[in-house]
Image 1 (cartoon, rainbow, N blue to C red):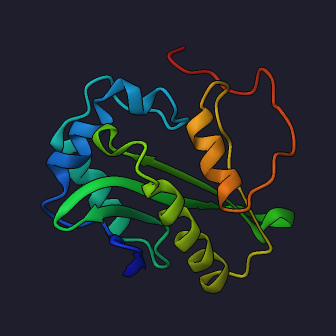
Image 2: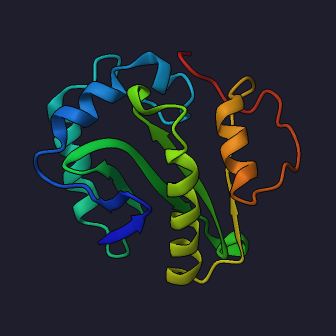
Length: 158
């Protein structure tokens, strides 16, 4: 699966992406903004297990973001169920060396279009930790609207 986002490519995770994935997930400047729990030390074996899991998705929802041959981020959907089945949560991260270049905005715009065209969705939403102004700006620039603040809704690092 490939989705062009300007000069960047949203693509399926592949064998060979393990080192870039592990390196970025071991960067606390990236993981401090992610709700997903990761092992304290994220190894290439963890990355391989994730990539193998993504390869099993019948309808792909988790992707690498590439600049040429280099993986520089990730983007994905969490499809909702039941009464919320026409909604999905979107999440993304960009490698720290690539922050501030507008990459996330280009990628999120293209990915949102993909999500609405591929799945029977009427709503995409995202959660952003307090203080993550960069992600808030990305969401606003791509048409997402602030709806409210959740309090005491997540625990990180116990």
